[in-house]
Length: 249
Image 1 (cartoon, helix red, strand yellow):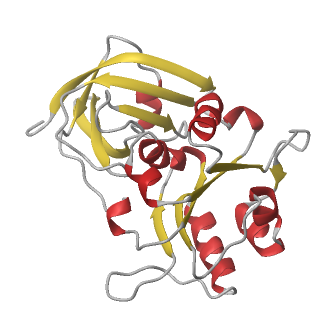
Image 2 (cartoon, one colour):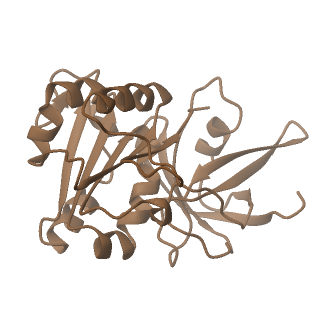
């Protein structure tokens, strides 16, 4: 495919069935944490491609956090690949879901469902987020406790940065999961349990919120936040919320 380079899988980690992290050996152009690149495979004689957020820091080998529906076209094929297999990679990253577009704030809330965690991993593995924000809350909503991934690394980052990173996990389909909130993120915003679990209150003066993942979560969370006066951030009209919608395919 014109403009693409060959990337070769160097590592594959399966967190749970259908939930995988892959690391590539591929020469990418410099990128900003939060951006995505297009990956592609030749399937039945045609090149199929889709965009995936980079989970890695800019100085590390490209890493991708993947899931997909069996009825999808590209993601199920990517999930079956292992070390040594090749993938087509667009070396030029794209996207505006980056800290470059986040206005000044002292507290950053990173809210994700599923693999919407990926861009936050890239940010947390880089320096800027720690330089800009006094406190960071990472909220991860999943279906089952097995989908709460990267826990050891995130715990280590919290310790490394003196407890400035606060993590809140939510599970929707695993009622026996311990030490988590149960239910959807928008409901936890409305009833105050999200802030209680984070040990931090949302503030129109101090907080900026990044929302990444399931479109329904984003739309419902924006609606819930709007009841408290929070608004979408736009270049010409500064606000409190920046979003990136993910579809699992």
